[in-house]
Amino acid sequence: MTPAPKAPIDCQSMSDVRQGVDALDRELVALLTQRQAYMDAAARIKPERTGVRDVARIEDVVAKVMAQAAKTGLSPAIAAPLWRLLIDRSIAYELGVWDRLRAK
Image (cartoon, rainbow, N blue to C red; front, side):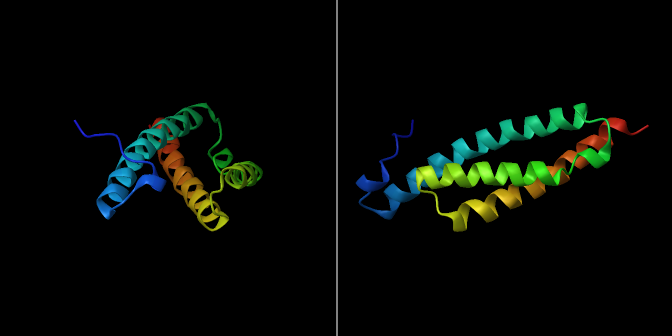
């Protein structure tokens, strides 16, 4: 069993840092898997393929993320491009699922 990672402020070595990053990456993958499941649901629910890309919703999501990033101290230089890429890849994924669900 792997010991719990140290808090960033308590890290004394690159091994400590890497252990913390690896632990967070495992959590992020689990959260992104859950987010992907919502894309599966959206693809199943949306009646029209053109409804998959919703520009107003994209901007709403980014605005909410940026507000949360400001509250928590996440750099906007990380948050904005990361979420835009996440949204872009999520849309591509959802389009593929939408197509597969309706393939004859």
